[in-house]
Each structure stands twice: as structure tokens, then as C-alpha cells.
Length: 99
Image (cartoon, rainbow, N blue to C red; front, side, top):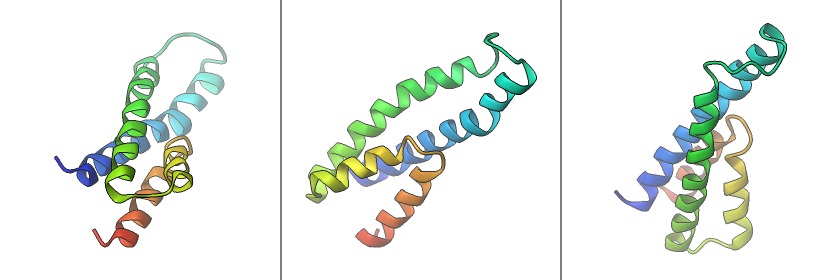
């Protein structure tokens, strides 16, 4: 799989998992359960914990292949920590790179 396709898959996965956590799991945990009871969302946090480092590595590999600046690379990596921003960033990069 090319670096670009790998990046797109990772951006999508990280975006989906983070959106589920922020928009569903967190409100459920603190509004419905009102505490720290373990629930269905625990595996989602683990998935995010595994996927995010892979997203960072994938972004770094793509940045080396595309010869991006360190600033641009770090900003793209940080996009994976903001809900839904990985989708926006991936679309903008696709348009910018002509992919």
C-alpha cells in the first residue's frame, strides 16, 4: 500500500474512533453513568491508544516521501487529536497534493 493510501486509511480510522469517543462515549460516561464505571467505551479508548501512534508514524512516513516541512508534519499529526479534524486535513491534503 502506498504511503498516501495508508495515510488516508489511518486518518479515517483515527477520525472515526475519536469522534465516537468524544461525541458518544464521553457524554454516556459522564451524563448517563455519572462516574467511572467501565463500559462499552473502554475498548474504543484502547483502539484510539493503538491507532494514534500508527497515525503519527504513517504521517511521518508520508511527510518524508512528500518532503514536507517539520511544521506541516507536526500540524498534520496534531490534527489527529481534534475530533473530525483528521477528515478535514485529509481532504485538504488530497486537494493540495492533487491526489
